[in-house]
Image (cartoon, rainbow, N blue to C red):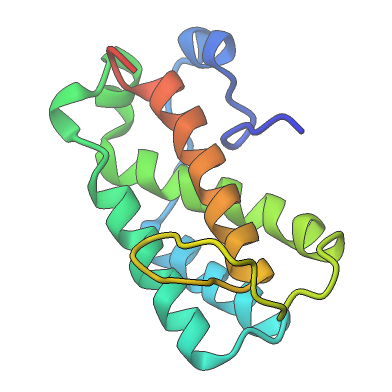
Length: 138
């Protein structure tokens, strides 16, 4: 599965003249709706939104490459959320027994559910794609 950011791949991003207009708060609200629509319990939703926010805060503005600087760190972070939003529903549809515990610990939480692990995995993949596209030395 390839992860792209609003149609950007690393080579495409280099040729792109400008960044799309995208809102972090709108994409975050959309993620919250996706989680709700997929019957995530409130505590899991809160945990995941906090974790996603933390992962995105850890993307340093100082490391933005030329294209990343043109977009700005908030737009880059919003693109990550957009990638998560576009990818997550399909991922959740293929997750068997989503509420079952995975036995894995992520984001300082022991034994996350399979659906939580899916969100975390998609977030990491989208964040990695953004770092490759918009950050230097990634």
